[in-house]
Length: 529
Image (tube, rainbow, N blue to C red; front, side):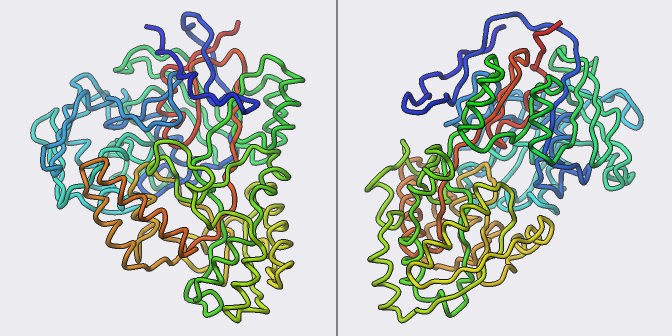
């Protein structure tokens, strides 16, 4: 059956490139090995303790999930929609407290010791879900879970302590693949000695810092896998990844481009390249201040720093216009359409005169502090921070830049121990709660900014359990406005990203964490001899 039509109506005619690509006609061809260039290394086989796309990619290539985010060429980048995977159907009770998943009776673990092709049962899913809830990096998503039970071989029941409107969404993500307890109990996962699942590919070899090699699972329960195999080459240098794409070595490369001019140059060199934009729903990066520091305790100081930044200039100069003036909280959860102008509120505008007045009224000058940052992307981090420092300096604010290595920054950022200020990133999430609860409430698992506001805490708790979409939306808008008004995060801009594919790589679209490679690889095929 051909894939559903791509939602081309999502494309913005004002942009030079589309969000959504149509897929050329053609029947899938069997065979071939897809090679891709990837920017992140593999550091573990255990998905329970990782949030890294590099580590989570591998278990999701060899395993399945209860559900999956709808993806592929018909993916709508403005929606988050679940579809069946191991669970062929599921339902939520009217009171929102019980989810029941009806698992397929066709799924089997891969035919190799110690699994030997045995059936994948509800008890296997129960064990994996309970471990996710008990320990590791993703347990916050399951904090409302009271119990998880295998009612019979193919029925799984999850009971919540309290209603949680989007509880099932993370279960369709790369963070919750179902893996066998035998690999954990033998120490194979922790020791990186073996990895297996019920998924479309079988692991042949994994060499950290170099490559992953996988082959087709000939007995895959969802149907024939088109590819013979997949090879993931770990290459942290974007220039080398892009060179591998130019030569035809790679069918896909991650994060190869930062600017429109680079994308246009690639299309000029290789006109058949398939390239699309990834929408920006939030700024993602922004300046986190130590809110317990006396220098930033007066909200007028924080508001002044917000008004001091010329975001339109950053978008134009650094991103060649392909960036959005948005806060770190994604608009897609709180609005029907992207907010602009007055809908964004007063604090994202550029008003240096008002910023100067507020700093003087707060008796905050002279103001000096150090900003720690990791240069993930030269345009988004180092160069943006240099421009912002110049804009602050015009008001008598000295922001000294200190670049640190990735390991040190990630440790400091995740531990909320970054000194006076950090150029921080909003943790990636799949749910409304991730952004409107866990990232904002006092002591929240994803609250890297040290925000502690009783008003936000109350609204965040209420929206989490609100099953009426309109009532929930009203609470989300209150939270959105409050975070901006109090200037708890000094926002930058949200850059649109680029994804590139060879013209012969078919049925793959990667936008964000909801469209992970492992969720799509079974349907990918190569249109080349």
